[in-house]
Image 1 (tube, rainbow, N blue to C red):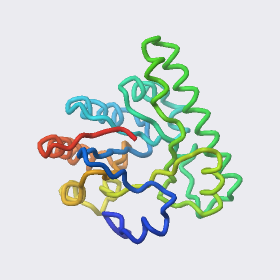
Image 2: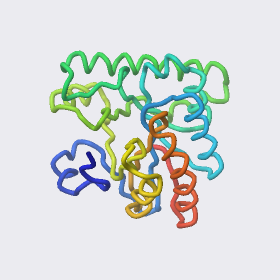
Image 3: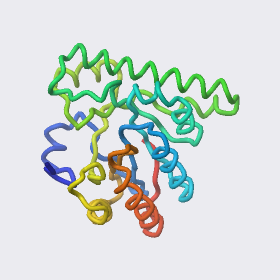
Length: 225
């Protein structure tokens, strides 16, 4: 069920300890991709970003990092930032807090392992390595309870939500509507959600290239968080 496409100002106010957008005067926007790494889909996404000299942030599922470490390392190698999306894509509202926090920690172990391996492969990456954050966290489904949030923030995580949801994952949203959700709402500072997943692949492959072209033509700069 689609509650909103562009996050309501009241929601941002009520949950102001989360990052919903990153205001700036430089026309910077922040593309984010959830649920990867996914064979073929993540690699295709990286190709599109490279074409437009765009950087992004990938919120990765730990189990997928474990299964596809080469793809994860490629995300890092191409200069994108990575964040934590739990190890098993847990829904916070339905998960015991201690189990949730442990699952986040397990994902972070996979992230750290992949980042270390990438740095060891290439000495030239070591200086850039420190700017690729591992303290970014996005709760799957956007569902996290207050206690889970407090515990994760106490451990140094920054909880990144979003300004715009593309709904690329929603089978009831057409590819054209997915594109319109982004293009009709984007502004400087927007954090935009796409998914590099099999479920979202059809809509993503239609909407992402057109989004990148539009952003470039309108003078927006795609930055990593």
